[in-house]
Length: 321
Image 1 (cartoon, helix red, strand yellow):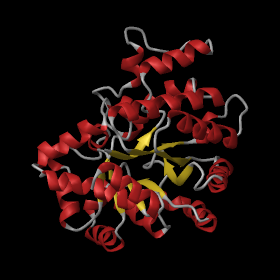
Image 2 (tube, one colour):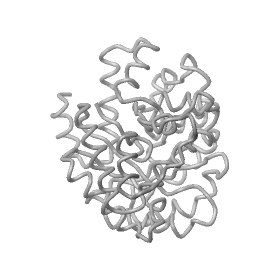
Image 3 (cartoon, rainbow, N blue to C red):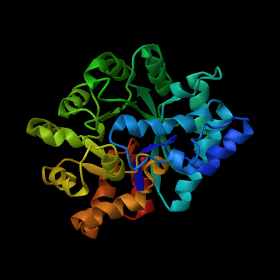
Image 4 (tube, rainbow, N blue to C red):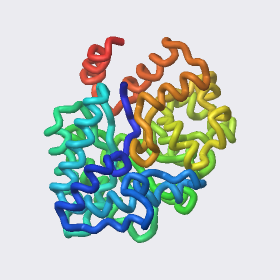
């Protein structure tokens, strides 16, 4: 299995979050009557991406120093290895881990060390964040990614509250990424409409995180097919955030019929209460995908992974496809 869209802070076990809190004498603000595990998972009442993003508050409280970030990545990667994954691209926003006075460079180096310690084959994607007043932080994220590109860092991303901060407002950020030669994926077409996807592609994104609402505009669908822009689908998360109203309406078949590359991913294992095997099983049973079609998702993941040709060939041999 391969997961190309996996957030570190949304995929840590409650045990690890509790351990990191205890080590730092942090009292986590868990609501009365709820456990830490329940507080880290999206409630059934979730109706939007903004509701979903609220679950990230607790893990971020304990991830504000390099040792914590290193331990988090090490633990997550070892977990992925035990699950039997062959490769993952793990993303996080270093600018969200600076409250104790660290730099993005120090936090990123800690993440790279954690992956290396685990012995798991993974790439790191650094997320810029949608918002106001963080332009300098976003540019520093890109500079940090550029300095470590090919040496732990695989690409950059734009994440966060898409409906509140439209993709079109970040043209300057994308332009800087192009100057730095950074491969880009972008969260788009989740809380925002197809115009968000079109903006991301026009700015240079070669992969789109989610992208479901592309189906609302035939021209955007044609654009994705013509340019072979890969969609990082995350079924359970997409249902929880309301990006898609029901599994029956999930547009994966429509994407594939038009020749749009699609991969299956988890987004956030803990927040969404899932893993990569559940995500594959969910779509396979809902749409009666054959074994050959399911294998096609893996081949697409390898083809669009942020890896060099030799690494992709190694991955194909390790999986046997």
